[in-house]
Length: 183
Length: 139
Image (cartoon, each protein chain N blue to C red):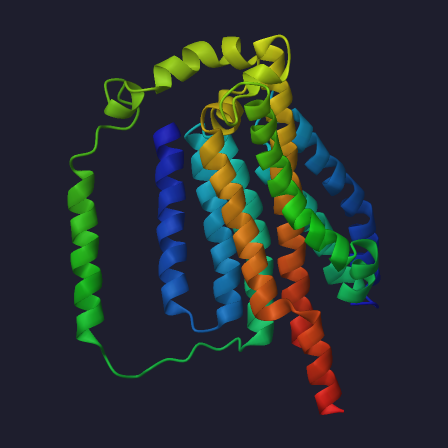
């Protein structure tokens, strides 16, 4: 039953991706991006990665849809298309895709307990996290305590993104100057 | 959007539960799914919904851009400060065990504060980015 659900979800994901490539109306593309993120969130949920699903639903389906619509309002909702057929990009995409698929052949099977990732630090975290941190949600314990440096880096990245947007587009002083110039 | 009665009523009904849910995700992240990042995004989404329905200028009166801009830095600084405090108390950077007499209590306290820092920064950045995008369109 779970296999059936995963297959249906992945086919929906593929259909959405193809529709995103085919459509030229960018507002519809943004809506499809939201659906794509929502489908990914459901797939993460099926894989028992609740925290990731949560983030994907909130960021991918929520915030980024709003921000992309905002961008479209600033630019144009129509995609510029070139009528010429371009063989080199197609070739690059096919080769990259084939290399990626070839790479997955070496990956351990899904849920394989002998996979390297389940042998390294994961057992230690699962065994000791509740005792050492007193926090039942191991994901939070790993993110905030064992991997505190990484999370600090991530927050700094978000901070930098905010500062970057403010510097590039924000600056209320420059906007008033421009308004005065228009008057 | 000022004339869309249904949108306005539904938004007024929805925004308080959204903000409440964000706080729940923030402070219940230790026990269930979620944490500072998700909570910050949801909290920001509540404000963005308000700005979409009632206009950016009205939303700026609620979340003043100057204050939100300071909050962007406050979250990161709060996170970094926890690390500094644990350094001063004799531990290594971001080692929460020294924050309280009992290491487990210290870990709990440290995680609580840094998750709060993450939440503040993420929510403030989301609100700021949306305000910036939305204000630019009309100028």
